[in-house]
Length: 271
Length: 284
Image (cartoon, rainbow over all chains, first blue to last red; front, top):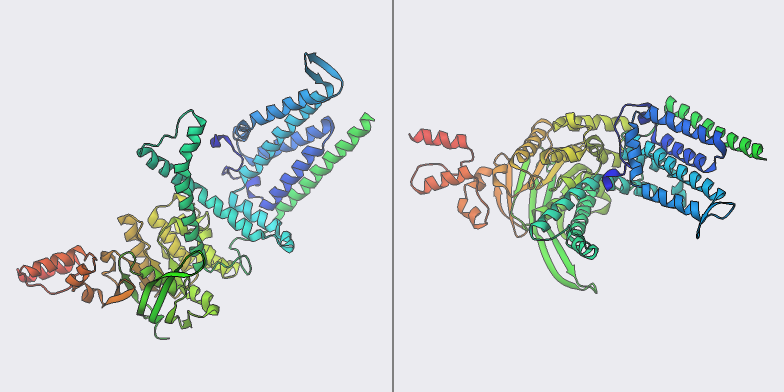
């Protein structure tokens, strides 16, 4: 199941988007989400679709790869769509026993599903073109003002990057433990849910023990290398804006302005 | 500064407490240990599990503070709180498990972790990282993920990470214990190269006797005490005493010892295959 979720998977390629500063991409995703939830009318959606298509082409990531991410949430999208379709009150256009579809319900359903699909595809563009490391770097740098209200931004980003580093190690370890327990007669595949959950215990307990041991070792290793929190730390490759980042910012602002303009225009047309 | 590490009558006790904080048991991990390491030496500490050798290493890196005695690392008193960071800068440490000491997801960034913590300026970090990776022969892997490397390569990255902090001394705390023979050789070779070419003092902690035949000086520890000291030749010539301590002597030394016992006229403390063949040729 985890194989299907593209969200959070990096696709290495040599494109303009890959080279952008992670802060620009984070900000871009934010703008994109704002646009998704504020557009009205056909021109608005056309601008958003055009923007998304341009970004996808620029990213050089195969389209197939992006849509793959949708597979994991198909059920969620259909469910949300159906709820909207049948549960909205308004002018009834179709009725069968207790079920009814209203015009407003149909509108909501279409709007909701498009938004969700576009949201997933759009945000996976960011994660597909940004390495997890530069993503945490970008987050750390753009969240820095939060330090003032006592949010430990550096510590959180350090935890994130360590977590990312240890995911493959712990996955490998899980497989090892699983095989070791299977060799001693444990059953992990069965249909009975309760049995399946119970079978996880001999897997999770050793995994947790080893994770704690690793954490302890790692803390020692970090201390031995003079780690003393974020204060006074320098970076080998600090984030710095270049010309293309500025251009990207300008494009993003224009995009937002266009979507808002289209919205105002559409409201006037309706009136 | 005469000695880079100087410990005298060093005592370290692990104190076990029960739930109310009362002392349940005191375990003496280091029992009046004396240690002297001169700059540029390759010193080995031998001993099997629980002999206190890792505890000693952690004391020298100021990860643990001794209960009694004196300890100076590069002229700084390691018992004083304010010297902790200086001590760690001058005595870098490489640990046992290769996976649990690499912090970043890219080799280059991991090597930069130490200097970044020390607040070294950007261009200086880049220079140091390049030199450190070059010194351990890992330059070609600088953009790799550590997960894609072998155990020996990971340990070499860890050594580079310490090197980038430009320490006077590197403590390798059983750094080869989890590696295969090939990886073990790689790491040992890297440390010897650093010792010879860059003049870095190495404190090499292990329970593999074969690895320390090239060392300048050997300490053997047992139950928190230093029980034997000397050059490898002096130490390994005392085969009976080593076996009493349940330490296995290198195969060649053992062979020479057995030959001598059964009447062949050989000198004590033969360390390498070449030496043994030469001595045997003399007899023929």
